[in-house]
Image (cartoon, helix red, strand yellow):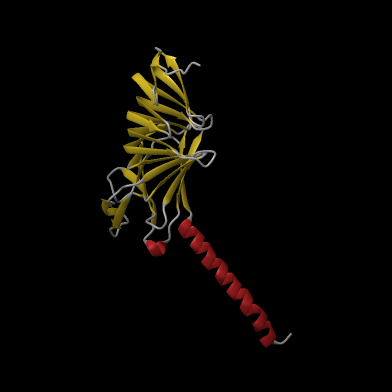
Length: 270
């Protein structure tokens, strides 16, 4: 083979290699990943935004806060930062992981804060300013349920994180009908048990029923929720059910009182 022919065959190979490198860089920009552990549960934080849009991922920075190592994951729109916890997915534009400098990986000493803000950075790679957006949006998606809040925080050594409100929940119907809606002051999410609980001034609205209480524990897999109140109250037309605990079947829109039964039912007799 002539040297010229060899060069012709080598050039496409080199270009192909360069394309592979470019692709690898692009993937790295959109999938920088960090992992937190809580007992047997992993929280996987990934940056799903592009550097061209202002995304930044800075790991284990000791220059920002005394005695702390900060990992900062910033994924501005149209991208986002996702935190996957088994079958649940949290999304935000900013994730900040803090750990004491001497902390060992896997000991649960990290805190995780998820928020929605516009961020500027200084030269050491620290956050210079973080301005909350006009309508902050941090979401939790689990099955057919999406919960929206303003901030999520998981403290060190804790298995249960807190999402600040106001909380808005929407659960899609399984038959294409109107979704079930709920609102509350705040929400907790137990990462190991995969359990979301709405707290404070809970109000659930479906096509025909309005139910209220001061807490709602959601079991997405079973399609049920337990509402607690003093009393919890559910109204559908002229039917009123009250009790300390109500079991709500989310797909059928049926409610069963399981504590301190009270109620008024309209029954038509022929």
